[in-house]
Length: 370
Image (cartoon, rainbow, N blue to C red; front, side, top):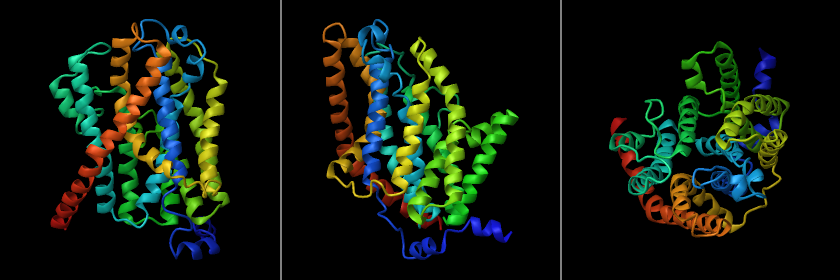
């Protein structure tokens, strides 16, 4: 038992440093740029590799770009890695109520707006997919439509249900109070539960622990613990096991991607890109990018979420409407620039004014509950 307790405690030096607070800045600017890069890779995958907006296969429209763009979906896996890191970082020294307020005020204002805009565009111009019903739109506003069997207004919103399950599980640790030992135990228990769920074939357990994506969040959490407390064999072990489990699970996703694109792809880039995603987040964990503090990275961070929410269905409608009148390269370039501007506008007009108001209301209500 003494050995176990020792393994679950940070080194004496790390413990001494952590008692004074985080050993590095709470905000990691480089991750903001990395998140935007992930969002742009997903955008490229949707616009250049999928046929949704075009009359022909993307490899005919973009003979040189379709192949690299066909791996842009791996930006989602990078998102999940970063999310494990950032959520653990932002939740440290916070109570459950503060964690709940921060997540709701961060996720919902832009999401509500994007759902309504996307639904309106599909209703007025159902060029790529049929318009959602009013009931489906209202259910989508809860962000809980997937477990209720209601289709997403925009297909990319499936990742939000994955994120929500991570928040709900991690909230159990936040409720008890985040410590090195508790977070390590959480990583170990979640990993074990994911493997058991996969082997048992239990739909209920799979829904709760999400074995297909849990390894990314666990690896991200381990990276934050390294960032805060210093490296250890235990944390590198958690990170390494998570990578191996992610590599095992990624091929199911890859098979679905090939069906979606409707042609075969070389499989070796999947593992190479996945390894690169894990490596770059690990490099953040050990401080390689601590000095990267460019101001534009902050802008990149605030654009990422609204860009992800807005780009897919609306972009496909624009492509379908203009593809026979505008050269494909110019259309995609202009559309990407337009989506970045729309993301900035959504942040300035919706997120910045609405998020603080939601935080104030929720804090007031939580105090009333207490």
